[in-house]
Amino acid sequence: MGQISVLLVDDHALVRKGFRRILEDDPAIRVVDEAANGQEAIRLARLLHPQVIVMDMAMPGLDGVQATREIVKDQPDIAVLILSMYSEENYVRNALDAGARGFILKDALEVDLAGAVKAVAAGRQVIGPGLLAANRAPDPQYDRLTPREKQILELAAQGKSNKTIAALLHLSENTVAVHRANVMAELNIHRTTDLIVWAVKKGLVRLP
Image (cartoon, rainbow, N blue to C red; front, side, top):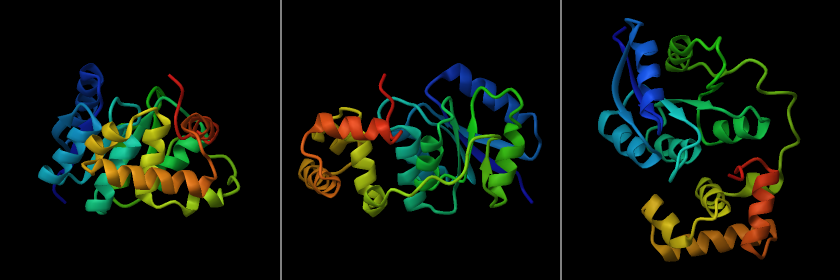
């Protein structure tokens, strides 16, 4: 087995430096590059095809869950390990729904980051201690949305305009408008403010 190649994604340079140090202490792991946001992560994933991406969840622009959705759609063999400050069950589910293979809390002192990277690289799912309680009832409305619709729903609920969403996802504004209308129709929601309230209740977005 060669070294496990890892791409580090976090919008804070100091955090990346700390994680890089932890990971490079392990001879089995090689950090191939770092990204500061979701768009950069998608670009570097295509370019470098790392085995594992250690991805911060909360980032400006495209967040970790959004970026994971894009990366895993293109390259399903990349294992994404999400690091989050938030332990709510919905966040964990959203990350796994987007295709992440692991979810651990950023500030948990006992986190064995290198161990988690090795586990997801080997195809195992890693969920930090105490993160997932008993199964919640599935939400048939949300589950009926396509991955692209879920993405646009989350970005719209963050208050982003169609134009901004189009730029982030490299889509036409018209395509975004159609997806957004489909989402609102599927959820039976007619105003963006109601969409935001719905998404916050579901734990899809956090109010700043």
